[in-house]
Length: 385
Ligand code: ADP
Image (cartoon, rainbow, N blue to C red; front, side, top):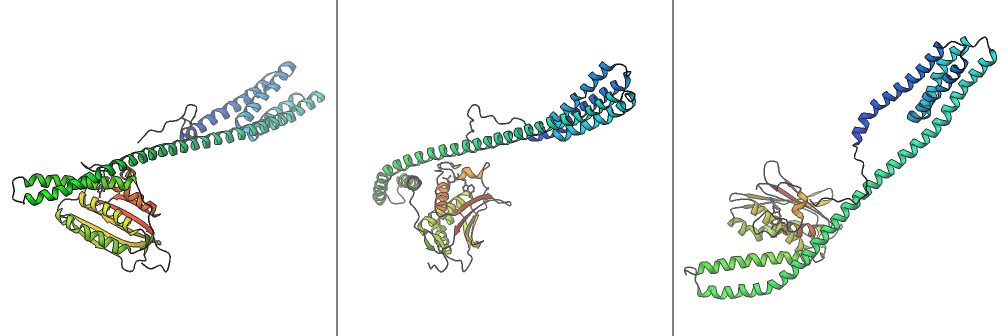
């Protein structure tokens, strides 16, 4: 796979969310502990300091602001108000007991408790607002990273398909140039074959020449198909008849490879909306791959059917199964694991199926072999083949 490159500055959070979640409770506990300890220490200082040390008591009472503001910053309005209440609850007995002999000072100190609540309210509201803005900014940043990622992948796919289109066009142009001379060479070989009958010592070379030429003609044909796709002429098509025709066409070559083709065609299928010639081509590619995947004694099972208003054809073989790696790349042009393979059969097949508005899937089968499934749309109701 081509690695996805990121433009500089496109920061993506390096911290996995699960890690953040895992560390949050421990951090919170530490903060709660700090707020509680500060509240407790300030209260202890009040109770341990004799009442005549006014100045010290004034300082201590202001020190209560520290846990209240910390709680607001860390836990928002709720945390701030709770801490203010705790500070008031701890400080109030001291005011009521130690300052009962100075009524004016006592009232002043009790009003200070109200100030605790006001500070917690203002700082808490501000902190909550800041936290919600931060959360929104983080969500926007994550959304932006995701969009950037998607864009990169789309760009990469576009670049890849652009490369394939260029390659395909180039290959088709070359194939076009080679095809005519090849056809002339095949004609010449046929003429020579008349002079060298099957028992002739030189006949073997002519057979090789002919076989290699057939292969070249087949491969150049595939390049042309891939490089110059024709839009399908969709019409009501008998799917079973197309499958039977492909099976009939390839039965001889399957026999030569020692493979039996078995068809299980669902009767009374509605007509498919397809271009019969292109569908034929797509199926030939799947049949040939299946036959080539098996040795002598192999069985190619082909079935048709209708599921959730789509028609399907399944071509299942008993070969080694699909090669390791993502299935998607089998359908990429020029991917092949066969010596001398063009890697275009499945690319052409997929394009035909997609041009029909259908789907193609491939999978290895559990008890050995591979299965390719094509799904096609049915023709509009009432259409006749
Ligand atoms: P080619 O046949 O020229 O290799 P294809 O596009 O038809 O090109 O196939 C691409 C690759 O997909 C094959 O080389 C093979 O690795 C894999 N493949 C296709 N059909 C089968 C199958 N029936 N069983 C196992 N592998 C398959």
